[in-house]
Amino acid sequence: MLDRKGPLRGVRVVEMAGLGPAPFCAMMLADMGAEVIRIARPGQAPLFGLEQKHNLYDRSRRSLTLDLRDPEQLGQAKSLIAKAEILIEGFRPGVMERLGLGPDDVTPTNPALVYGRMTGWGQDGPLSQRAGHDLNYMAISGALWSIGPADAPPPPPQNIIADLAGGGMMLLTGVLAALTHARANGEGQVVDACMSDGAALMMVLQYGLKAGGAWDDTARGGNVLNGGAAYYRCYETSDGGYVALGPIEPQFFATLLDKLNLTDHPTFANQYDADAQADMHSALESIFRCNTRDTWQTILEEVDACFAPVLSMEEAPQNPHNIARGTFVETDGVVQPAPVPRFMGTPSDPPTHGDAGHVGFDEVMEKWG
Image (cartoon, rainbow, N blue to C red; front, side, top):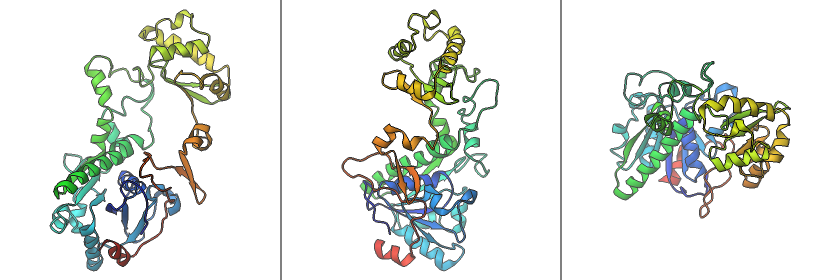
């Protein structure tokens, strides 16, 4: 067992090993000090040929390998779940029921259990049994349509929006809210987290803007937050780097213009004029191509121009602000993001890498019994 510090120290979690958002949720729980036991299938290995130590979603908790087709090992899984406060699973609807580990199977012996379920399309609905990934779940939420230029297909925004923000983080929020209720009332419940639902929730601002007439759904790449505003986008620099600008508010835009010697330039007289955005964009493209990314960083980083250099994954851990904040840590040669958020009274331990080792059933039961 890993004895970790943090505000969730002592919370017992059983995680059914899987992919993507469910392990990410379990990782966050472990980062915050929960005792998470990951039940893995025999022979289960990370995707993409990774070594287990590089599968960082699995950090900070130990694994127990069980063959759930074996009645004795299935019984062991049930014994662990009976001692847990939270269960995390990310299978298609019905899989846990077929294993004999559905809510109706395990809650009679543990009525306060918070049963966290993570799926792509939800526990019901026409698509509930279909396969999918982050890109698909974003696609039906309206989020994917809104990203990218008008003259090209929407780009895959990695697996961040539906998989992690709309999936893992929503499940985390849900199980912690349900845990608060269970500890107060002794009543557990099923938490149904769905990536397509979560991706839609990530678009709540944009749906409000659309309803109020401030977002044109037909203008891909033409709205203020998705590339249509010259003052909210990225620009290439002379060395092939990029800088990110975001001075939406007039006072920050004025600061940017001052540093670029554009205060009295007529093209920039009306920041929010839709008809002026193309000319402003063209002018800023030419200006930013005149200097390197580091030069622009020297000019703009010390003022309130809403500026940042666009860093690679290799560069980000070396950024002075990230170093000062401890945003990244190195564990046995593996550089990775540190746990967040930060807790002043109950700080979290540094994370392990993705292979914290294995644990035996008897060891867990001795600790949890």
